[in-house]
Image (cartoon, rainbow over all chains, first blue to last red; front, side, top):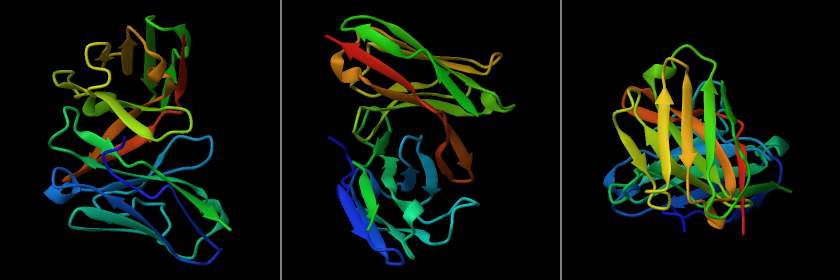
Length: 112
Length: 119
């Protein structure tokens, strides 16, 4: 059972906007810890997409954006493209866990 | 670039040692981690070790059974896994904890090595 909760799946047509939520608690996101987002293309290792809640590393297209509010965070993909079909994971820190790093349950994005 | 090795098929109660080699020049500067992904499941952080090896953390699910270590002279990271259980079956990734200012994140990740524990 993941500490951070994400919807199992979201879908959208090419060009549309989709959002993925990441819901935590007062011991992780709500405590002010940063949220990161990773993209995992089929059969590959995860890759960083967003760090520090809303910062894109160089090379990540600007159609990906992140936000955080209260005990939740969101990843938005605008202008959805076929190559965005992947699994997406949020990640943060948790002050109540013996090991500090926690991941979301993951969301499968399907491009219709 | 991070390259893992050592995965394979092992019976319940058995042991396995995973290795990860960093081909870069700055291995000794970074906290390193093992993160696993059970078949068809999400990501689970397993263990971390600080750059000097002085600080080590484990997930509750592996504490007392797994041991993380590193050799900065060889740019290598190991995970000794003992008393393996069926639920330890997963692809194991090594990942660097990259830091920039107040932020840190896992980057890069290795390609992963599959560990299968059979009953």
